Length: 501
Ligand code: UD1
Ligand code: CA
Image (cartoon, rainbow, N blue to C red; front, side, top):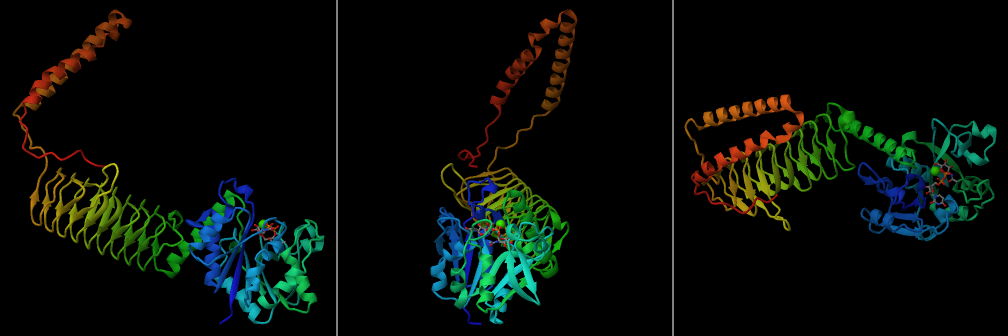
């Protein structure tokens, strides 16, 4: 089909009911601006050219759309005089030539490409206009589609409709396809003699019919054409989008969702066969999950590539630039950012891995922290393959740990560790026979003494009790402990700079 298609996206609404500093159509559904959903649908339906009609402050809207289509045309509707007037703001785009012209609303983000393609097919079948209709639960407020013998005769706006016309439940969704060769002639004839004094795009139907052109309506599902005017409608559209995405995951992609309604996807989440997603998982943008991977409960994942057979969570946080190779594992209470885990590598508990590279089959112990930030710059930690990082280790970047190296538990590693080496960087343990028992007994006696003093003070005079026996006790304890501690032998362990966080 070599027909050229132009999509005109109307985004000139004020959106005041959103009560927002941002343009309404930039508010996001599944993490993507509404207008970009519409552009994606238009593109998927084969649009060669996209034109956005905005109000006066439309730069941000067009900028957003140009991230997908950098050749998007921008037309400004200076005054808001109606939907036909808005379409004609993009007159130059229509004049440039198109076989099919699609008119879409930027605040109707769930429109499906299949529906737009059906509208185009109707033009190919010889209709000059194809209107997309739907049957809402409550038709009031919508333009009614007046049909006879399968032909569309007119669209009557709610404000202009008779009682009989108001009883019609087949309504105008606002989306329309017009044949490019007759579009401008029809649109040019539209006037504003109606209840609202606006140039109604819907008048195109009767004008086309008078010119002997054929007009038809097709029906879309109601969810597709749900518009967003306020935050509650935004949430409702989000819910619909999520519901459909979950179904697609389960029915088409072979993904197990144990509690589907608790999983939130992003517009671009990519899932593979036999992925299992446990309850309460959030996918931010930029995530791909490979076959058979398991995302355990309460994980938050964005900007991550997860290979087949990987295990994530529960309670894992994967951030931008995470790459987990086959069979690797990120366990509970771990955060990973801008880092890769080689095949079979494991970071199982309570760790922060940032700006790092971890080799295949390396085991990173519980509580390991890559200290990647020195207060102004980020530094990398590189760990080779088959290495072992003991629990509670701080890796002060930039630092490199070689293949097969072993780092002792509780180390603060500031210098590179060669392949195969053992590195321990911590104070040596001091053990004193019987000293523990002595301390415990002394503390117990002090506590009992303090309680007795308090009791007798209370019996004598409550106000005197403020003489703080506790203070005396702790001062004495400190005095007794201090010389002891200073006599403890200092181990030769080299001290690194203060740990970065
Ligand atoms: C419009 C349709 C109505 C349909 C309904 C579906 C017309 C005359 N009526 O009514 O049949 O049932 O949508 O929701 O088309 N816009 C501009 N510039 C303007 C006016 C509107 O860009 O001058 C944009 C708005 O931002 C909005 C869309 O066009 O995205 C629809 O405009 P709106 O005024 O909401 O039309 P409705 O009265 O809802
Ligand atoms: Ca509307």
